[in-house]
Image 1 (spheres, rainbow, N blue to C red):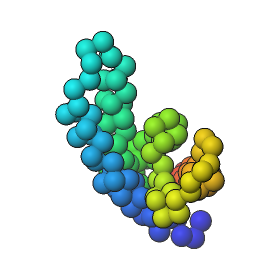
Image 2 (image 1 turned 180 degrees about the horizontal axis):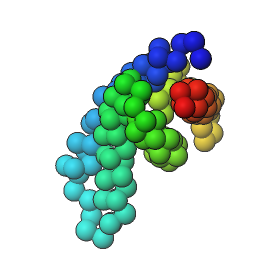
Image 3 (image 1 turned 45 degrees about the vertical axis):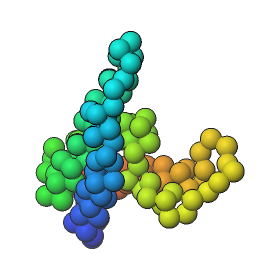
Image 4 (image 1 turned 180 degrees about the vertical axis):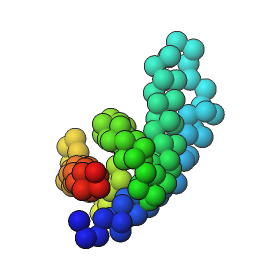
Length: 129
């Protein structure tokens, strides 16, 4: 791939921006007083907080083209969908859609872009090996 370094830096920047966008969720998870019988709430926010912090690490790893950066990015993929923390989720803020059921078309496009990101990352890593 001709522009692999630029693509990886773009993906790294998206991860760092995603970390910045959702940093407040970490703070909320630690300051919110959950009911005592809701152990699932604590597990949910701890997992989400670890994922958000890992965005910063994967951003650094991808920018430096480290193997662990690629692996961390692959591990994050299903959790990005689970928590709906998508790299391209910012387009939902730019193009808000209302009166839609379930997911708006913009979120579906962001999900498809996330799959494209995964495919490109795999292709770049395979070319390096």
